[in-house]
Length: 129
Image (cartoon, rainbow, N blue to C red):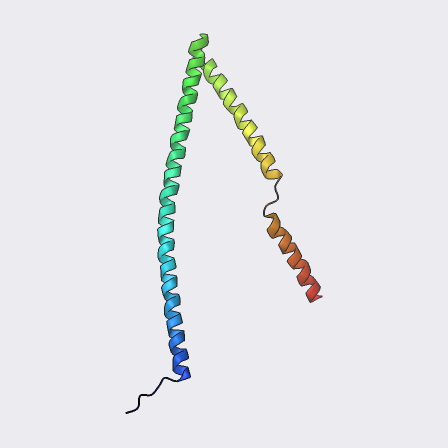
């Protein structure tokens, strides 16, 4: 009995089948890795959120301590110490607001992307008209 060698169509069919299996495996691996990354990121975000909350509580306690210290140190009423701390906090917040506004106002978002999109639009108009 003679063994029949596979024809070119059989080889192509097998190669396509192997490529499909490989692609399916790669997609499955990517899905698994993506789930792991999302899980890891979720834990990291939760940790950062907890740290931010703890920092906010710490700052509030520090400001409360400073207000009491001002009131006790100068022999003023407690409301005066809290008023001074509140005023200083608002001044700092306003300064940070203006710094942030100036930072965002000075920047054009995604300048390279906007420029290349304009060039592409110009090129497409030149081709179509």
